[in-house]
Image 1 (tube, helix red, strand yellow):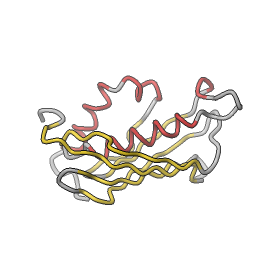
Image 2 (cartoon, rainbow, N blue to C red; image 1 turned 30 degrees about the vertical axis):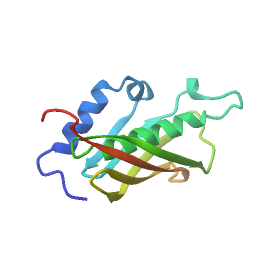
Image 3 (tube, rainbow, N blue to C red; image 1 turned 120 degrees about the horizontal axis):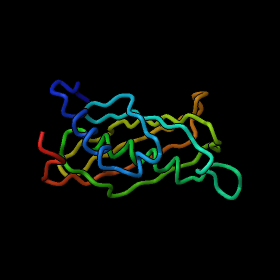
Image 4 (cartoon, rainbow, N blue to C red; image 1 turned 90 degrees about the vertical axis):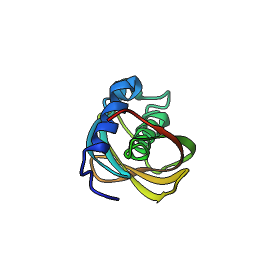
Length: 143
């Protein structure tokens, strides 16, 4: 990971989130971003619970997936998910504050591999996500 000397990661992330209505609905806030890395958070709301009274697994997955997307695209190279997997470790509840942190494991010419850890406000790991992205030969946005 390199520092974001020219603000490329920040500009790429801002571009994504400006157009990502679902992440806006989730209430995602960016905490940190740089090449190959992203850290975001959100607060769980009552409309996110499932029929079992706990938060729908898709919420933790979506937070992790967004974090993954931000890290993948942090170099302004249009990258899309090729394969993802998640392990749910602990249940998530209404009012939990979830933080997702994506770390780049491999940065290849055509693919990238990332691990995303999702924690709650007590720093308990609630989910582990792994994703592989495919890198196109296009820029995400004109910077």
